Length: 481
Image 1 (tube, rainbow, N blue to C red):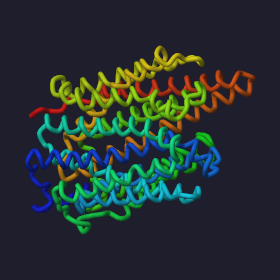
Image 2: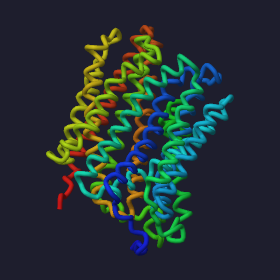
Image 3: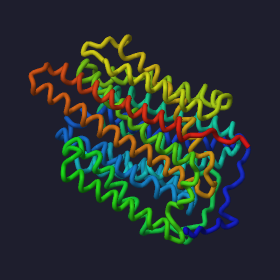
Image 4: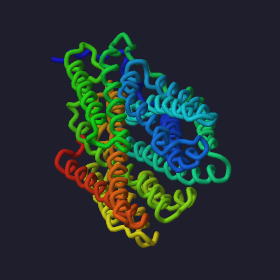
């Protein structure tokens, strides 16, 4: 049996303050998310310019993304637990500070090693700020309707950051220099940090003495980092290579050891009681598949537009803008109202059906695609993500004990990062393999690349279909009691 330490009287979350104070706090949390999402989409568009300037090889260039993913995904769970123990406000502000400082280092980078190290540090800061954000929103807005609107606004900011980043990244890179894509984080980070000191209510956790579980922290952080490292390395080494199999087996062994540790520890890092929330467990599984398909789609469609259709960085950003805009509009303007009227489960299933339909259209994408006829319909159907992610987040956090909100937030975020890394690794490996096979057989380059992308979109469609199946079977409506 797992021994749990009851929350001390002074560890209860503070009562929600006046509406204006809570709105300001939500604004601060959204600003932090905006900066983190903005950075991710900007870097993706600017990769070719970074490669040329710092003389990255194609294999080494991926580490400007992988270093961030490994740190971010590996530390989310630990950061969420630290938020529960020492205060989410402290962890959030510290995360903003680390992320902003690391962004400056990225902007000043003059070598491959310096940029990769700074990107890893960005991942650390991003994990700290992101892991506790949802937990603070849940505490700030305990009433279901208000919480739905707050989560919708939070989701909208994520979509807005993606759309702004895609356009801004291409514009800054072409008009100025790739270093400027990181400097955009400085004013946002400084403003959000200063406002957070005032707007976020102090929260007192029980302290590290109540159970940081250092051995558990080491096991899960090593397992997640090693697992993501193995996944992102499959593009160069393959899924069945001895390296991939050995690293994957070691990651699974560390994860098993962590689970045993949590079952026996008096003060576990991840209390297994968190998994009693069926909504959280099911939502995490659905999100892993959904984000895997969608994140992989975002990378693949950008590569198709540039490598096959010959779009530039700024034009690619504009081409992807309808998807991000519609996702943002649905998240902010419609999701909360529709969820309040029809329920989280129905909106989750509706959103997944729209996503599945959009990706299915791309499985027949031609070489000489017409944007308005062959690409734009998918961009519009991707609006389903705005419904799905808002509903999924509400379902995940609905039954979570307030004392575990930070841990649950970190766990939910971890599933997102693992899904993203897995999706990109799987889809890019399949697309590259198909393209190389056809090119070696004498097919034209554009035809070979397009066939590879179609295969990737077919697999992404399969991931969305599996997510829809799991959601239909496992996810149940949130009790309104």
